[in-house]
Structures are given as C-alpha cells and as structure tokens.
Length: 369
Ligand code: OSB
Ligand code: MG
Image 1 (cartoon, helix red, strand yellow):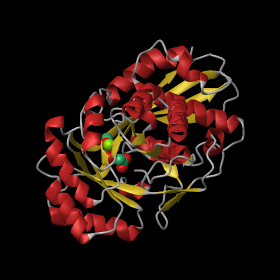
Image 2 (cartoon, helix red, strand yellow):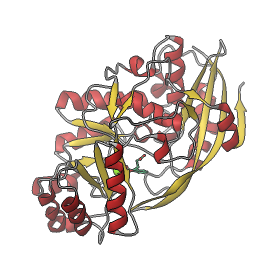
Image 3 (cartoon, helix red, strand yellow):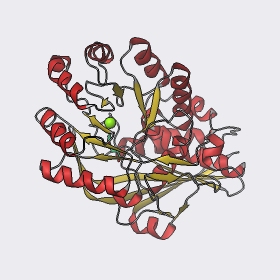
C-alpha cells in the first residue's frame, strides 16, 4: 500500500467532568484525528492521545501535531508499505515522540486491516470476542463523592475500579473504599507521586488487598521500583516507566513490576504494543490496556489490542458515555454486564461519524506531495 494523502483534523471535545490526577486536571481534550488515504482511495483512521500539558509524559497535543506535520507525515507519504510493522522502522530516525508516531501508525493498521478484509483485532492476532471493562476514577472533592461514583460504576457492571491517589489522599481514601466495598477488584494509580522515602507509608497499602499499585514512583525510577517491590506485597504495575520493549525488558529483569499497563500511544503504536504484549506473555507478566481519555477512534484501538490473549486483567477502557455527551463513532462503545464486544467489522470496526467530527473540528490540514 502507498499512502497518497493524509488529512489531519484538530478536534476539540469537552469531558462531562474534569479528570483529576496527582499531576493535574484535564477537561478539554484536543487531539489530532488522522485519515490516511491510499492509492485506491481506501482510508484508515488514527487519533492522537497526548494531553494538553507535558505532565503525564513529555508530549502534548501541540508537539504531536508538530512532529506529525513536519516529520512523520512527510516520511510516510508515497512510501510503499507491505505491513504496518514497517512503520516503526521508517520512523526510527525520529526519536521518541511515541504518541505522535502511534497516532499515524494506528491509521496505517486500520487501512491495512481494511485492505485485507479483516477486523483490526483479527489483523493483530486478537482472539477474544469481548473484553472486560474497568473504570478509572479521578481524584474527587470528597470521600462521599468518590464512594457514590464507585457505587454507580459497580451498578453499571464495571469489573474493576481504579482510583487515583497522591500523598495526603491515599490510605484514608482506600480504607473508606474498602470498608464500603470489601470485595470489589480495586487498584490505585499514583502517577509518580511518591519517592522511595515513602516506602513505610506505601507498605500500609498491603492490608487492603489491592490488585496492584500503578506507577508509585518516578518515570525513571526503575531501580527504586525494584527496591519498593521487594518490600511491599501489593503488586506494582508500571505505566509511565514503560515507553518501549526495552523498558519492559529492564523492568521485568530487575523485578520492578509484576504487571504492565500497555498504552498504545505511550509505546509508539500497535506494533510495539503487540511486541511488549508477546514479551510479557513469554515472561508470565500479565498486561492490561491503559487509557488516555480517548474519543471513539482511540477507544476502538484499545478494544482491538485488548482482544489479545495476555490482556488478562480488565483495563481502563470504559464506555463512550463515561467521557462524552456524544462520541464520534457509530455505534458508540457500550459496556454490557461489564464487557465490551470486540467488533468483527473490518478495520477498527466502528464507523467514524463525519457529521459529529465536523462539529468538533477546529482546523483541517491536508498533506500530499
Ligand atoms: O495514568 O492511567 C493514567 C488518563 C490520562 C493520563 C494518564 C492516565 C489516565 C487514566 C484514565 O487513568 C484512563 C481512561 O479512562 O482513559
Ligand atoms: Mg496510570
């Protein structure tokens, strides 16, 4: 296949409610929605996942746009590509910028699957027909609000609850959640809010039977995570620290984690995500799919990758209505009895809703040679 044209839309959508983590609050999601067009006029879709601020990783919506426009799209246009796995190699002279790379690599995967008449899940080697849905809840104003939110999501059927913690809003909050919901599969995400100095404090989490603690320490604290894991029972799951297969190898070899959160954007695309999934499977490390408050296209990619065998734990992929008044795909993503169906239609398996996309698009640029 040859990419002859790329259409990039700057889309702006507002979350129902602000999402608060230890690193900041987000309510407006700006993203690049990409449409790649091949020599036959077949299209593939992709969505950038970087946040407005460089607080989760160093990338932002604007850096993604810049890297896509000035570097990635120019090297991809008019290249003969036989498989999307080749995109990683084509992009290799351009360092990091994984979320920007993933946005267009995903579009190439969607295009490839359509050309092969396969669902994206099938093209990736996914076998699951449905995936278990988990919910990630931001930091709330009060414990009562948090407990009510959790009760609502459990009623909706979500299979696992993740809450965000930070120093000063951790043990007490988890204690309250556990006493109201003694058996709910529960985990906490610190988004790097602690250091190894907090080791005695973090050990107190062991009594709450958490599925895991996600990214307690800094992005580069790979050795410190290993030390922490040796002295706490709660399994550590790494998120921010894993930006490549190499990072996964180092973390597993050092014993820095027992579980890995794979985010397609954070690792540079579906091909690297699939490689990390395979490596973890071989090493007996469970993985699950993280989220970046995606709109419909990004959400569809998360569903497809989660259909791979070793995504054994419920992820952060929730229904469209948890985030948006209306999503940009039809049908929207729905959770039924705690599961999301993996679509069997070709490509990402959801139809982009052009009317709604237009409604939320603030700028469109077309690239061709
Ligand atoms: O750390 O997993 C995270 C959202 C934005 C940035 C980082 C994270 C998150 C989430 C939300 O936890 C997951 C989702 O519902 O998409
Ligand atoms: Mg996280």
